Image (cartoon, rainbow, N blue to C red; front, side, top):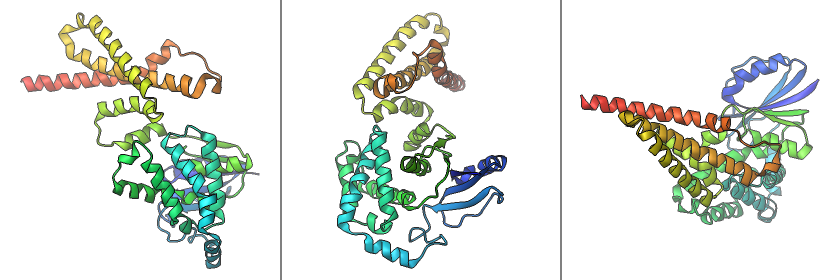
Length: 345
């Protein structure tokens, strides 16, 4: 019987229960990232599920105090082994690397992976609480924020909140996870870091089954107050903006405007009776062009065509990628027409 480790989010527990129960030839260990140390179990105990390892991000004063193997003696030892010089030399450089790469969208995955592994090994044998209370860790965080063109404009309250969130999310790096023949996570976000670390440490295969377009979801969370057209525009410009390719972003914007101008001149005469529809369709086309050019630029200029076997884009790719935006543009135009109709009455 081979062992298979899941790292999951609470809301996916029911679906993964079905997966585990139908793979009887495997033994499973489930690692659940939760918001409290003793969550209510919503799924039955399965014969091939060895145990559930609960990792609470909140609700505990000392790391791991909810676990049966937790002892005060171990806590005191970790605290005694943790010194400021050790934190400065063996933890802070990797913490700084992780923050820098996170700000840049993870342009160097190897550096991110190495930083995660090094921080994980350090926190296994040192006090998590003492480490993140260290002046060296706070100084590294503060310098990375101050030196950044974007984050340096943030309010002090935002910096304190961000530091607080990072400290709690990094708790997952301080746990010792069991060995297995295969690792699987339900998302490429926080819970996926556990599997990345284990893969880099032991070379065990890692599978991720993403249950949503994670990058888009995080982008939309940045500005939840945006309306629908503004969210679409933000999704179109955010990829190049995150890579700091400002010239490419401005170029794609100008090219999109020129293309839309030409198209408007072509269709204006034929659709002059329904001009409001033209505006909606042009808006959808503009978003489609911006998004398509951004993705193609990132694929060929930033990631490089040699990163994996690929072929040139076909017309169908452009049509399909822009179809959703065009439909939204048509919806907006009809909404404006309907509002205008009732306003006229």
